[in-house]
Amino acid sequence: MNAGTIVIVGAGQAGGWAATTLRERGYIGRIILLGDEAHAPYERPPLSKAVLSGSVPPESTELFSAERLAALDISFRPGIAATRLRLADKQVDTSDGGAIAYDKLILCMGGRPIVPPLPGVAWGEGAAAFTDAHGVHVLRTRDDALRLRACLGPGKHIVIVGGGWIGLEVAATARQAGTRVTVLEQADRLCARSVLPAVSAHLAAMHAAQGVDVRLGVGLRAVLREPGESQAGRPSQSQSQSRSVAELTGSHPLAELTDGQRLVADAVVLGVGLQANDALAREAGIACQRGVLVDQYCRTSAPDVYAAGDVAVSTHAEAGGTMRLESWQNAQDQGTAAALSALGEPAPYLPTGAVWSEQYDAMVQIVGFPALAASEVLRPQTDAGALVSVALDGGGRVVAAVTVNAPRDLRQLRKWIAQRALVNPALLQRPDVPLANAEIR
Amino acid sequence: MDTWKPVARIADISPDTGTLRVMHEGDAVCLYKLPDEICATQDRCPHGNASLAEGYLEDGTIECPLHQGVFDIRTGKPQCPPVTTDLRRYEVRVEADTVYLKAQTP
Image (tube, rainbow over all chains, first blue to last red; front, side, top):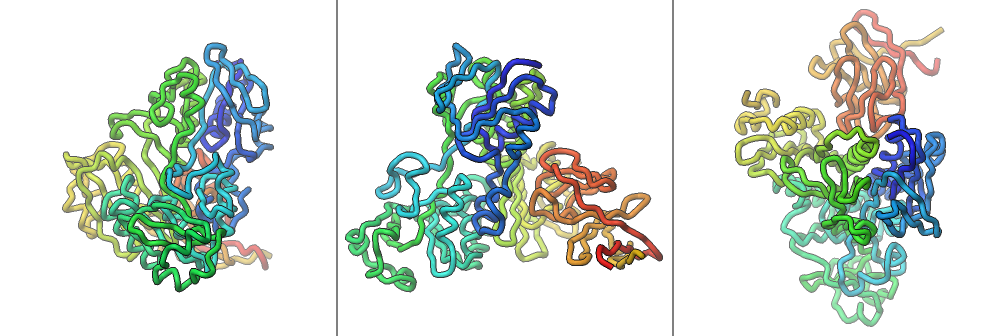
């Protein structure tokens, strides 16, 4: 396909890669990139790290600048959201009252943080609901990061709800800024959806050593704010250390936990997951299932409509079934794949499951699909903070791996996962045997 | 006249990885042992928080261990997404098995 108009809805990382890939592959038609944020496409990983700590300016996360997009003759329209897809007419209605006709449409609407329907937590709509005055925060956008940054520092206390990647990265950044941090995780271990138990234990020990109060099996019941409400509860000992009940005012949230305890905080940070922004597609009759369903060519159920990134749900039997991947790697790779499909040069996209996380001085790297795992084998490490966890399926084949501060091993593991290599667990556990020699050929 | 500062001996470069991270005038620099020469670039990947000395050396390229960005070591040019910025290169001289990097300031 060489002419016409391709409209991309969503100017995040996936949308940005889709747009630039179209041009780099020689597409000469019109490319329109709609983004409801005011910013050019940027990468989100630094939002919980360097942007949150203030060590880099938020603009530094930019992926493709407005100038670069203009140079590629991509019509980037920041602050303009798609409001309706009219598939029969092949048109997109926009928030500025316009309508754009498309030949191909790529949906990259991403997701939004889940806000649990708890008293004092869920109110209002959208980002406007989360303000300093309420004391409840989410972290998805640059603006979210700047709001939360103001709540960090010595003498402050934040309660993080959810011991997943976002929660743990915020915990690490907040601790490094001198903040007192409590992490609540309803499950009995951290990051339970994405890593096996030994990795969870490693993460919990690391955060405990840094002074984070990690509470497993405990969730949030409500956030109280009114002075009358806050005085109704007796503070626990740890709260009274930092602030007396008399000081409680409506400006400080009071987190009530499922075990009945109440914690005074400067901020309550929700890190309980992401939901796909699939309403636009659903309302247009495109098949959705907690996200826009796509095949391995990023095609949705509607002709000429593709989806990629956090919003897309794909099924890969060899990767463990139906999945919606919320990763940097997937946003880039699937965004690129959707563009190739739209250009009529499709190549099947199989995700690698690659995810990374930086917490304190730990570089955590994940690859593969833990959903397929039947057992976990640890390879002993000499460095105290290092970890290599290899996940095997029932047949002894490598299906996933996690390394902490062991980047070199990851390359071998990645190769094994792609090949579903059969390995000898006993040899994996022997540090004197080179990793490669653990493979059974 | 150029000044050269010794940073390592060739034997210090790991035969396993072909790389070595050294400090040179306050910068982290990665040395690479290629079949016919020694090269040097900035050690930190311009894309992310990763040390290229922990990456994978192959056919004159280095692959970042974090996001698999690949650079040509001799030219510093990025070879594939996500990397888009050239690596800073350093001039290298080898004498009597010692690796020298050119001083930026006399």
